[in-house]
Image 1 (cartoon, rainbow, N blue to C red):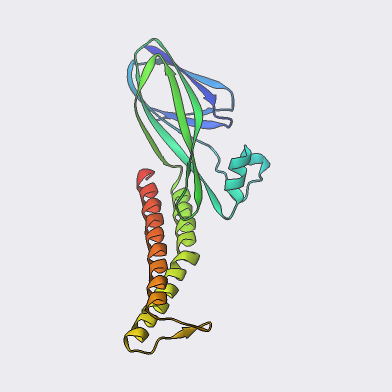
Image 2: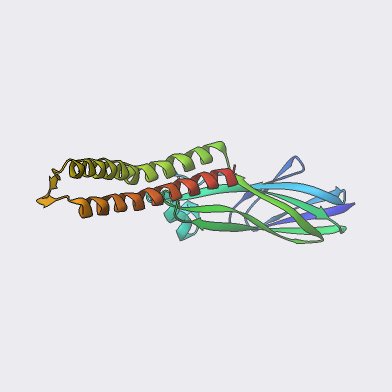
Length: 217
């Protein structure tokens, strides 16, 4: 048999679901689970509260978390982390810490906040980060896709329509004039090249957004 002590070093209160039993661990405190079997155990760590628009900056912790939780041009995404741990000693200590990852080149900058663990008396055999709730996932996708489509997606549509119209006009021998400039072939191909660059950037953003959704599903 073994005793497992779970230390909270996350700068916030957390809940730990250990093998189906949930424990609340206040900030900077610990909880001990006694008389458990040695071997593989699964623990899912999450926050009992979500940081969102209704919470004040003071309540949301450090400055970067506050900024990303409330800034319209950035996003703070809370994760839960599931650890698979092989306990091989009579006393095992798990120290839980906050883990953050800044993801750029999405629709807008996103800070993913999950958990990491340091273990004595055992070894980590697996870890999986997931969106804290379905609502967190929905907000992530909605905000990311909105930022990707407006204005970049709309801009691509406008550039494509103008570029194709200018190309068709050149083919007929009557180049269009915009802003006092005649869109001959060089200008038209330049416009289409800019449009292609925006399109590539747009699809890279979409790829990153959906890759993040798949990773944290």
